[in-house]
Length: 394
Image 1 (spheres, rainbow, N blue to C red):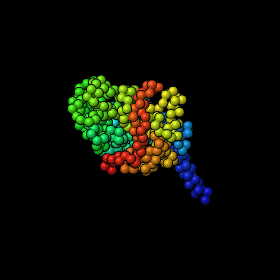
Image 2 (image 1 turned 135 degrees about the vertical axis):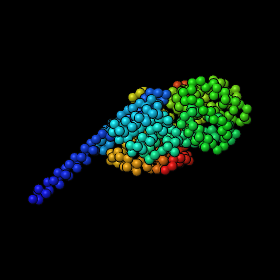
Image 3 (image 1 turned 90 degrees about the vertical axis):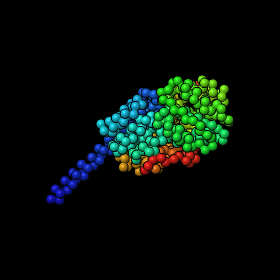
Image 4 (image 1 turned 180 degrees about the vertical axis):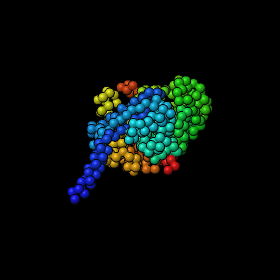
């Protein structure tokens, strides 16, 4: 009798154990939605390289967390918001991914945010920059390892915000450009912003825009700067307008190495960078640089470091939850969480899930050994030095 009573209970325990073991044995599926093609293809491909290198490094080469294998599914949003939104919905709904990383462009990210909320799954934004992503368009399923417009703006203001300086901004007419200018304007305390020039994102002929900016600056006393906030393309063509004749300088933040070839025209130019491989001194950056040189015979770039950082964040979080990918476990684990990256330690701010991180004040040096203008480090701007506004409505 006793044995008969115990058997069903034993069977139930066995079934429950098998079910639990089955869940733990399932792959951790991550969708990486990025610009594999399109205007920001170079950025997207770097992010993908960094993500895969970072996952390998963070898991000690096993690509597993708590016995669960990590599988990355790639999807190409082509830089199109509607496509990115649909791809994320398909990833969460049809592919049953546990969480997602991406995208490259800010307008795509803004289209994707409500999808994460609808499916109640984490979207780790890397590298889309617009403040609104962790600002007024944010929801609790959104975390970001990439820097935001305010971090760009505050650090760049360190380089150019001085008494007697007149500044004109030139930016793309997009969420990235407009959020960037808004944050930059807020960060300026001493210099005077006299004009904002917005141009279509795919602009190749800058003549008309450059002439408007020259007209705004040429008669002003003191130092005159055109500050560029641009993604993709070559906005430095404005230098063809002989800006030196009017005493006008160009300033901008860091960028990918191919874009920084144009920086060789501007020795002494100051700005602030998210990353340059020679700047951070830590073991994670050393590992990234060594792996990248080994695989590609070249240094890692701006967005490679970002992809690597996103991988470090994911694996750190998944280790904290013992491989549990549910949002109700990941969100409390990630809020306030610090993790190592090629840039040093980052921390997800609890209020808006933006990663607090260092930026790097640089001055451009021309070195014949490098094809690009080399950003020499003036100083690391630490997270605690930047009063990054909290812009969401949590």
